[in-house]
Length: 399
Image 1: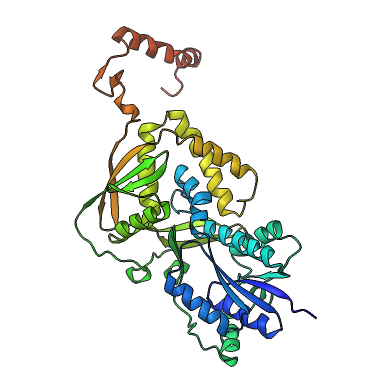
Image 2: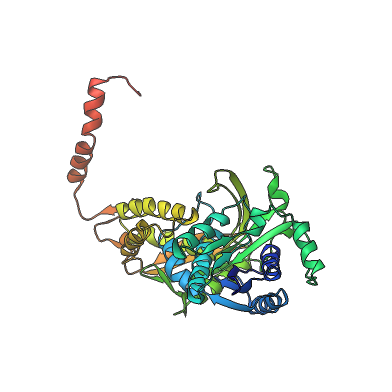
C-alpha cells in the first residue's frame, strides 16, 4: 500500500518537530513545509531544513509568502490604520491565515492525503489553520497530534530524545512569535494581570538616545520612501522603518483581548514598524481625507481587522471592504513627519499636495475668506434651530 502523504505545517518548534517525527515513525510520507511570512531569518530556515530531514521528513520546502502577505493583508491594514482594541497591530493572527493558505495550496499541489499542524486546543491558531484547510483543501484529513492527545511538553521532548533527536527545547519563561508586522510575547509576568513585562522580556532594546526625525512618504496610501530613500519593495520599506524604530525600543505594549474561542487573552508585543507606519499614515489622512471619509473608513477598518483576527479572511465581504479601503486612499499622498525618542515618538506634521488645510477659504482660528461675518452669524443661527425648538418646549432641562 502507498504511504499516507502528509504535509506538516512546520515551524521548527517543539510541537511541529514532534509531529514530523511521530508521523514519520508511524509510516507516513511526511512533507515538512515552512510558510514564511517574514518572521524567519535565512539561518533559521536553513536550520529548519536540516532538522526536518533529521526528524524523518521525506521532503522539506520553504513557502515564502511575505510579499503576498503584504499585498493581500498588510496593505489594507495600513489603509485602515488597523489596531485591535486601538492597541495591537494584528500581527501573528494575520500571518497565520497566510501561512495556512500557503500550506493548503502546497497540499493540493502534491496531492496530499492529510495536513498536520501543532496547535493546541486552547488557542486561536487551531481555528485559523483548520478553517483555512477545510475551505481550501476540502476532503484532506487534518491531523493535530498535540491537540488530540493533549500532549505535555515533557512527553514530546522525551519522545524526540528517545528517538535520537536531541534539540534543545527547554521550557522558556517567555514564548515569542516573530514576524514582519511585530513580535508577540506570551508567558512570564503576563500571566499576572497586575504586572507588565520587564526589560529582559523584549528581544529588541534601545541602542540610541536623543531624538531623530523620521519622514515616511506615501503615494495612494502606500509607502514609497523613508527619509527620502525610495522603496519600490514595500516589504523592504517596512523592514527599514522597523530597523529605525527598534533602535529606540518603540512599539512596546500589552494587549488584553477576546479570543475566538471566547476566553480573554493577554499578550505583550514589540512592533516598531506597525506603530510608526500606522500613526504616520493616520496623521497624513487627517489632512487629506474629508470628515466623512475618515468616519466611514474607520467603521469598515474596524470590521476588517476583527474579521482578519477571527479567521474570517476568506469571507467574501473582505474583498468588498478592501475595495472601499483602496478607494479611500486615492488622495493620501505626501510625507508624514514623526519625532522619535527612546521608548516613544510624537507626530510633527505633514507635507502633502493634497493637504486640505491649505484651503484658500480660510485659516482655522485666523481669518475667513469664503464667507462674511453676517453669513457666519446666519449659519450659526440656522444650526442652532433644532436646539432652540427643543428647549423652547422643555425649558430648564440641562440648564
